[in-house]
Image (cartoon, rainbow over all chains, first blue to last red; front, side):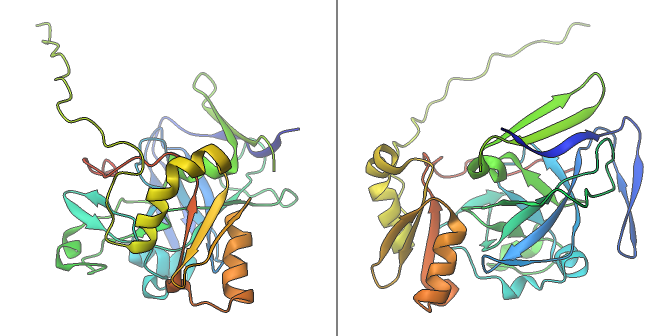
Length: 182
Length: 99
């Protein structure tokens, strides 16, 4: 029996705004936004924050150091360097940090409210998360030049090990995500 | 004016076969060397390699993660965890488009 995670999650054709802590962020048209939290050391869960579900993103998760700090309460330096992951952006090797992602279920037909009953789903990432931007040197000297996405990105690769089925209903602009088996 | 459609240029480089990508990290290199056999025996499971030579397979990453931290008392930097799936090889393009 599939376990629902996202149920009728809406996305919009016009810019919208969301509140994250003390921040108000703009979501661009047609961006699918989900709520996530960062998992560290196999069990700890950060505060929740939004991320764009981006099927074109070539890595599991990308976030800037400032968003990771402000929204998740995590200093990127506290996350262990993920050895052997050699992905590039703009020709620069981007270090990845060991962490996983909790994906939080939405309330049916709502984007910004979390379902209080359904449990979150842990997305176990083999490549960890990419943290860069804000002019911070997160690896070699060139990493200072890296520009982070405007909002965190959750890539399709993050869904790989959780056996998930994603459905995008473009007519009604709703997203459905089920876990096919535990 | 009708835009010209260009054919996709032929790929001149053959992708490296699974497991052939060298890695500077010895644990990752070991994983890639063993990957063809792992895909046959344990596709979709997780594997951990530790600096002191241990290798263990389980259904979830969390199980291995906590085993290393709580049972083996290892520091996080002394092991790697990998999901057993085909290796995509080295990146040739940017990992994402700016949004």
